Amino acid sequence: MRQIYLDHAATTPVRPEVKEEMLPFIEGEFGNPSAVYSIGTNNKEAISAARRKIAALLGAESSEIIFTSGGTESDNWALRGVALVYLMKKESVHIITSSIEHHAVLHTTEFLERMGCRVTYLDVDQDGFVNPQDVENAIEDDTRIISIMTANNEIGSIQPIAEIGRIAHENGILFHTDAVQAFGHIPISVNDMNIDLLSASAHKFGGPKGIGFLYRRNSVKMENLIFGGGQERGLRAGTENVAAIVGMAKAAVLSCENMEEEMERERKMCRLFLQDLTDGTDDIHLNGPAIGENRLPNNLNVEFKGVLGESMLIMLDMEGIAASAGSACSAGAVDPSHVLLAIGLHPDAVKSSLRFTIGEENTLDELELTAGIIRKIVERLRKMK
Image 1: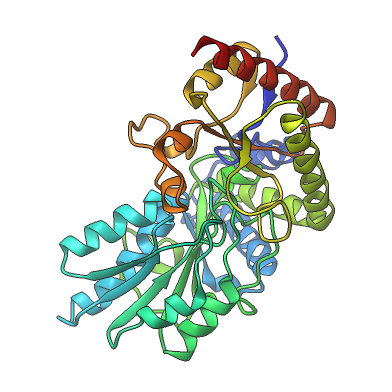
Image 2: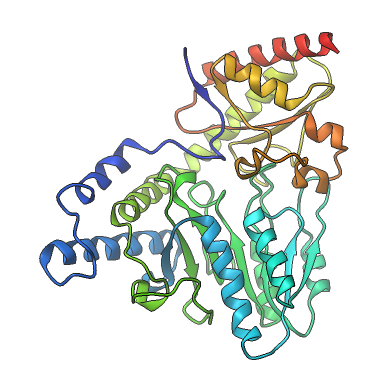
């Protein structure tokens, strides 16, 4: 059976060039980077080279890139690490974030609330955007960190990060952004966008799973999340996953090489796909912002009124088509998407919504075929009601 994969926001296939880059460090170059002999020092230099490559893509210093196990760890560390600096001094901590953040942020702030921190969860508008004025209005004397995602994983809304970062800096507050869905897909400059801390994950842009990084501006003070040896300049203990690190760096470079062209290609494909879905079929609605510069170029989140999304997913899978009902990290959850509820959708509309996220390997022919199959499925399910 053919396979049409339209869930790149969940994970992406590892690029062939990335596999090739990783292979030497799985086979012959297997040494521990902390060792003093050549098979170890070769690994240490490979890590340093990867750090320089990723830093250059962000306009950062190589010393500001810390390798982690992925976006979840990076989010946890950014928030907990900053909060602990103040909590250990018995100082109060106020955090500002949004209601549509990934659970890696939301569950971390819930934990910090149990530790005595206060958290403001900002509402978003019907397209999923945070109002920078709301950020400014929420600032208190003890606001220590503001955390707003660069782009939403479910509806693709790209936040006004540079403006929010400017507000944070003008008030002497650290700014963190979860860029897991954005890095490698849209341009990011940590200096132009006033970012102090940034989280990213390799498997979202053609790299392996289980590796990511935290950008931490050198001036930022934060406590460690993991203790042990002196790896990552003493900031994160644990023997480095060298193969994954070099693979992530390769994937990052490849993702950024032709980014503008790929963004335009993906936007065009999404527009045509949405048009194909709506041709001849009523009550199909795009969730989130219009396709354009304020939405991730590869993201479509669509409500099929009167049809259960889970039923559609099963029938699509039988046709060899992979899509999603929301965040991959919440695939087993019973509760409806907190993101779609936050933008004002009725729970029935939330349950009728599917997310499609395209990648480099997808073609217009695949999307045209998928749209035709979806129209038939929707018609069949609506007749069954």
